[in-house]
Image (cartoon, rainbow, N blue to C red; front, side):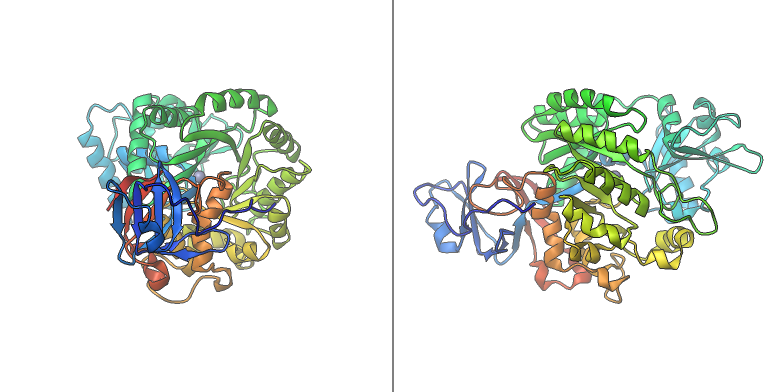
Length: 546
Ligand SMILES: [Zn+2]
């Protein structure tokens, strides 16, 4: 499938007055010719002119707001094609352990948070680094030492693990005799006692026991997320797992005129409830549809994560006969994907292991053609034979560039369990591009930082954000800056099925735009993420300002 034709980049009506003119800038339009111009003019939320300063000035009236950019960079509004914006905001309102680098720091934070919130029945938080603990995860005893009397539930930074204290285990009904739920695991010691770490669907046990998150809390979480997104230049998102509570938060804020970005929400599916669940998703989609909200996507978790050995691999994990498991049989996956595609949902696959990626692509192939752009998210470990299939099947590679660095996570948790040969097939963005795949960039916040510029920097350096210049990890897999920018603009719009209205700066499109303090093409690659986002416009309205 090809993108639909674009309009001309230097044309527009001259008989009307603009509301807003940006001029004297380095405006990268991301149109079909990747034109660079100096000015954009906006009227009624839409772009009415793209071209030179003189042409823009002709649209100036007495009430026109004119911004002299003095060479600053303008890009189409940035897209985050895989994010959990409500849950990320909620996490900041809970006990936030993100970025803490020692176990003691984590325990101190939990203790002080509990002391500051004496009325909370449960201490809930997240973001602890998996790398702080052995592969089998942390134990409840360490949490019991700081919070003995109230339940504590802390999500890991992989989004697939949780750490509980003894009181939370007790209230969740998890004992030695509790069987692992389907697609989940209760970590146990040598005597079979639960250690305090849970994986995948086992997290449902404490979630069911803890007080439910209120509609107000969800809405407040989304407000936090929206504020950060506006500051970072994000004007459109793909909400990657819209559970009912999460979807409601978008509906509430859209209805109240508070939604300062466009949202395509992927409705959460359940692996064990086959195609019958699609009827309820259709109803949810119809209820959700609003001014800036659509829910025409569906999320399918095909597998788990490599670090916890829950990802589905083609060959076994090192030193094991186990190659992980998928949440579906191929037949069950095909049936669900068929039902979703028939109902007009774009399917978003969480697929980490090479077998999960293959089975996801197989399910798309079984459709016999689709124009709904199914996206394979994460695509962490892939077999090269599968990469050309992404484009051939009309799909999108939904990548999280922040993960493509050789950090402790890769060195201590991933490489040891897949071995050095397979480690060369991790995050092969360059190979995907060469195989013709369209790449869309996403943060997976709160798993990784929300800033698109951080994702862009790592995509073109494959080095830690603060590592400075130096050798890239798997340098043949680097993207160019142009390609990385496309992944967060026009390609993101394509993945969100909205390239007809945004993703590039062209006459007739919505005036979603971002102003950066410097032209990224003139910034050393290792410093891209330090460039400040100065202004974020959604439909010509300034929603974020540095
Ligand atoms: Zn995610």
